[in-house]
Image (cartoon, rainbow, N blue to C red; front, side):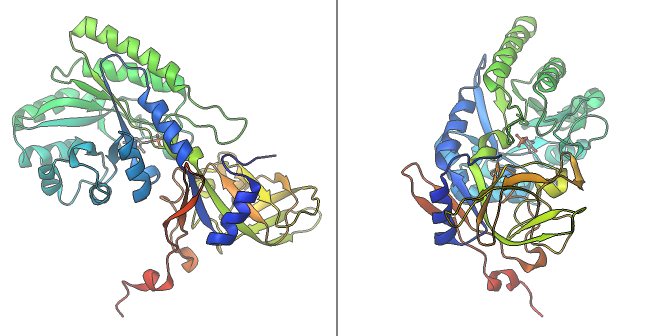
Length: 417
Ligand SMILES: *Cc1c(COP(=O)(O)O)cnc(C)c1O
């Protein structure tokens, strides 16, 4: 049976009482530990750790990582703007985006860095800033992810510039007088470590053909175990092997490349939990299932519905009366059959009953591993449920509200007729 990761049952009840549910709870201690682990990533000639803020973009979290010395990877112009408004220095923000920022010129003039993710983006940048230096995102020809939906490399992915177009890209850059000083790859989330290393070697081979490159970003994608039978990437081991490759590159090409990594998941996944309340228990007879319904769902956590992802689920009984175990399909509160928290692994359409403590209406139910791609990636306001608040468990052991629950007025404020 699953267990709580960073807080106790008494604390879960305290949160349920004090803030209402659903509510996200984040653990400052885990954020810090993960950030320090990443900052200690072995490297040969210098390291920048860029937090992929799309994983969890709340201001308090951005500020916390900024204070620890992390830079920011923004997935859109809007994300960059959000980071700037949180007080992050523009030089520490880099945009790697599918959609070019509406105000690329303004953002870059403020100091924000740009990573051109297509030939069109490179051209646009070149027209605005001829003679400048820039980074390019290359699709090295392979991808990997915990599901096909998180694979962003290889021939079936539109992310980055296809590696076989490199000569053409060098020509385009020369036409604009652009200097390609930085190269970037990111092939997916939840990448298998061997594939990650293989991609790193391919990327170095591509960097070898770009004579002005002095910095190589190998993206994020470090795998994190949320469930007990999953395995986390060993970043020290991966880093050590990469450092050796960078040294070899320096011997062969006379260039000491600065390393950049761009973790999202690794920094925040297990630093967050979603605290919900059990609102109903129903069943569909002896040949059917027993369903445990929560006051949260795809409005707060989409990963199970979208990827068939598994998260630990812990029932925290409201009373001390002894409880047995029972098998449940855990369902979200949306009028949507796909709003399920216990899908079959890797198959969002399948159902996989989960053995939990027997649950009663009113019990707290905690979804663990909910720090990455939950608050930041959800079916916000579907069925008109308000966006859930966020609470930080500080190092001092206090629960501090960092984002309020959305009100009905806020949900409706842009409707003008
Ligand atoms: C999403 C993303 C990341 C982070 O991926 P994780 O799997 O969460 O570590 C890093 N870089 C880019 C460009 C991304 O889009």
